[in-house]
Image (cartoon, rainbow, N blue to C red; front, side, top):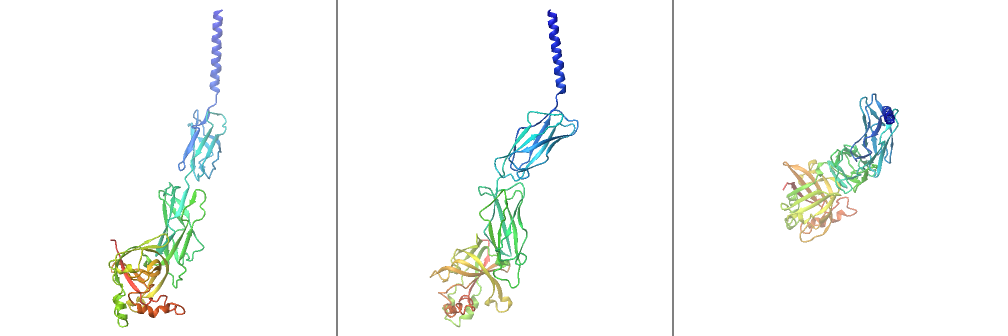
Length: 433
């Protein structure tokens, strides 16, 4: 009896082994994702892979469906819509590339589709969290650019904290010429691009405007206003979204720098012309000593700033102030004689503050018009200042009394200011001191 029971048990075990062996031989290979959870970084590609439980003998296509809250071709792009496993291999991948992924809390899902002859493994759906890119703040660097020959206009990109940022790819920021501009591209100026291209790894870019000399130029054709179009998702306008380029003319209007006082260039002309007419004191009190003065001129948000230093006579008129361009005009320099060589193009600016009494004994602070030009002399760059918008107290008073009515209607056509024909003209030399 024991032998029969033992034989029965052995037969049962053998039968189960055969059945189990047959089942293993008939099981289908499986497909599954390598990982269940992925993260697509803001600016870095992501590889998502699947694995077969055994290599395939022939090329195998594995379909999948896309889902999630992220939008294909907006938030991301994907390299293929199915996995392709090559013969002899057991794995395949697709690449997901971040695109305009600026919105938070978005994800992508990939769900495997059925493949004849294969079963699913444990991971048949992959979830990908999308890291949003930081939105780019863009702005012009300044609200105002003076164009003396050329003007370089800059745009910059910033992060949410207002700090300069760089990106892994070039950033293109187009701009528009505002319809309120008075200067015309191709006539009064030219510009080397219609967009800013900020190279990868940089945080700013420039475009260059160049002045075009026009015969019979109109004073009011000198403004170019720039603004940005809507840049769409991923971009936020910054503090300065409109800027003005003001055309002064040639490089003779390039005023910036530190200038050391040299000479009152029309001193001899004034003395020679008027000593015989007026009492000697009218010309001996002329503010001729400027060697102890320096002018420092810098570009500012809306024009220029001027800083006067030293106890020379130029400080009797100039004050630390801001100033803006008004117009350019050709005027006669009497000290240079007659003829065309005595006519020079001068750029007129309005000082917000000057002492229009032009004396240390009395201060009459107010706005004042002054003429500047820059030229080369003996390998030095010279800033010339022509001062005529003042009411003299210590010198040339008879001249003022004689001509003051000429600058009021109906005689204004003769003189804009009483001292037009008797200005004080200074020359300053560019210095590195």
